[in-house]
Image 1 (cartoon, rainbow, N blue to C red):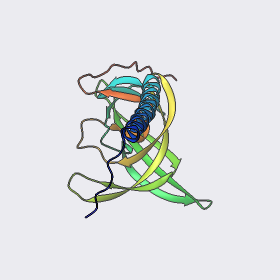
Image 2: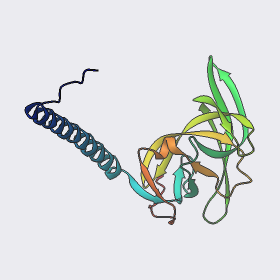
Image 3: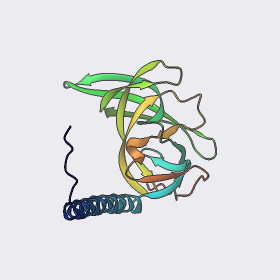
Image 4: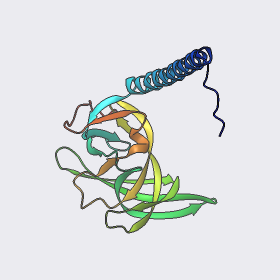
Length: 190
């Protein structure tokens, strides 16, 4: 059997140097990607506010702050509504409903609204059953900034908080501190 000739000392040095340069190149690329990712995460984090897991918010049609649960486990925000009646007007989907909101003094406010329906969503409940819900867009004031947010309309009478803010709303705006509540101001403007 013939044996392959042993590599020369010069070939071994060249291969070792080439491998070293290759590894250095890979590490520098990896560090650049890591620095870019960290820079992007820092930039995204810098624009977000830190809020507690419960905050007060203002909803259009009501001049009193309402407690809302901030829930990163929920994708879509929801709000307590009754008498939900979807209908069509001029070929467009609309929904008539009554918001049921308790203020900080536990006074119940009922606000009748009529809005365009944004869409229907399928929500998976904790018991595994799926609900079909209509969604509407409402103006919400959080951290004294008014923005439009999408909410599913649902009976939240069995829950402590009439409003739940989910990831779609919170994602680009808020970091939740689960050990805190009421970190943000909540002044409702007329």
